[in-house]
Length: 367
Ligand SMILES: *Cc1c(COP(=O)(O)O)cnc(C)c1O
Image (cartoon, rainbow, N blue to C red; front, side, top):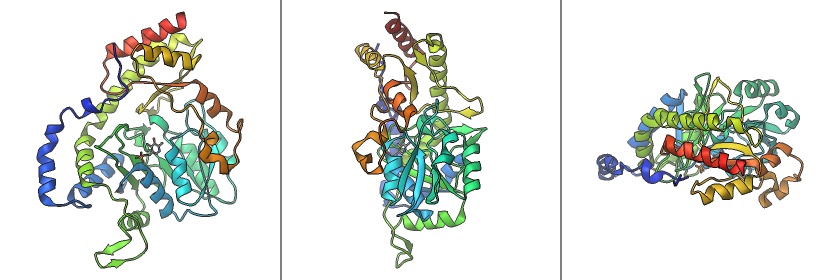
């Protein structure tokens, strides 16, 4: 039984249902910003529960622009998690600041108990990453930020639909960044991103900076960039948004089924704690296992398309050489890089496929 990692053909099997709206868009000639982008921003801010949503070209741009809007740049330090996608750290570097990493906890996210030790006089912001759909403990992050006068930019890129006590991730900090990359829960036909905030000043600045710093056609108030979301992607995102609750609920059901099926293998598999006040959306279903590389090979031989996110920790990447980190600096992230495995748990697999994965994993550890 094949269990596919990618599912975009199924996700967009109804692609023809997008055609009437696409036809309207093409006929309107509204190819930069315009009504489709505005409509999506309105819907997305209502969904997340912030006053504003400022859409962008990518999730990475959403992060870079968030840092810029806070005036973060050369000489500043920004704290984030040791295990995240490259873009979190890349965006901090692009803004001109220095990334300061903090080790992970047993949910694979920023260990909030280690943040304060990383704060210096140069620290300007904390960037909790709601990694793979696992929300970070925002109450603690906000308490620390307030105590030290720091801004909070949530990297909620992979986590549309995730909540803490029913409040959406991205809406806790000064700013939140989302990605609509094809492999995120809310996915478009290419790249897309969005910044959410309830801060009037930041929102106004971001809208202008995203669009060349323009006030109107004939005037600019600053040197900006072009980081606009494509109207076609806004059209797709807006059509998918009403489905996101159901689609993430299916991921959550698969994750529960996996948790239940694997919990008796605790000699070999370490499942992360699942805080009951959080809605985790499982952009990826990850767990720590014994003999990871052998299990990975075995699963792939059984047509189960498991992956590893990621085998090389960020601070040991060539790109990170200038940051001065060494092997041993983030023992939890390093251990997880050797033990983590990702199983398909997306909305387009069946519960039979989930059972098949469980029985193959059991078979592997029995032998
Ligand atoms: C995907 C992702 C990004 C980058 O988003 P893009 O839209 O691909 O630029 C940033 N941070 C995290 C944690 C992500 O998962």
